[in-house]
Image 1 (cartoon, rainbow, N blue to C red):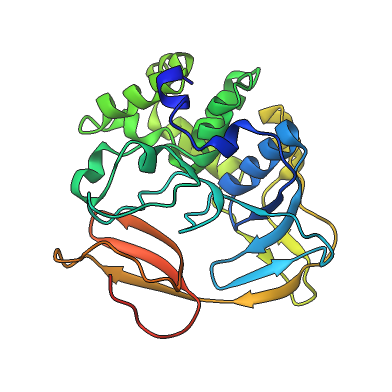
Image 2 (tube, one colour):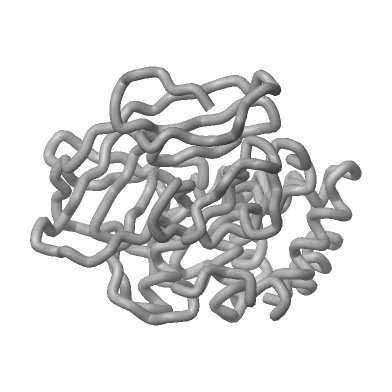
Length: 274
């Protein structure tokens, strides 16, 4: 990652500290959790499915760290656009390139459209996977390849890869095509969710051993059961154009899913206004 970008990340990103990691329900979060464990030794202790938070070891009292999670407060790694407009405040402890570079609904198509995993890979200066397929697989997470093949976004997409120090991946994208990545997504079942069963155990159709080998990164789902800790309400909204951009205190996570729509989680079931 280029120094001028890295220096803008929250201070906690540069300090090794014991944290309890929160996994969400997809491959991007799982790979990010694996990176956090590899670099800092911090392990998964929470699972968040956007309606509920589950805790594995009830005795762990470490501060939490969300991975691929647009928290409105607290430490997290994230890749979403979290400003509804340029005046919106963001979580100062979010390690999110879009928040750091002032991306909002007002300049939505200037956003970083890569994965949280790719962002963390760059920040921690991990070596890229050894094989071509491994590198392509990394680009397939959260469809990080897609912007390269759209003339409207290719220039911005490549600028971000250059900021991340991944010029090698730009060359790879030039030598491959969009269908190659869709084939990998299907082969490795990257669209599969991570779910929790009635007994609290995590399960997924993701081929974890294959993914670990291809990425040269050990991925693991915790084997112990999780216990329900907190229930939230997951909601969606449409941008009207006259929003203040200020979120109420009961909003736990918030992200624009495209320029006109957003998704958020609240502590109660009352509708909120933003």
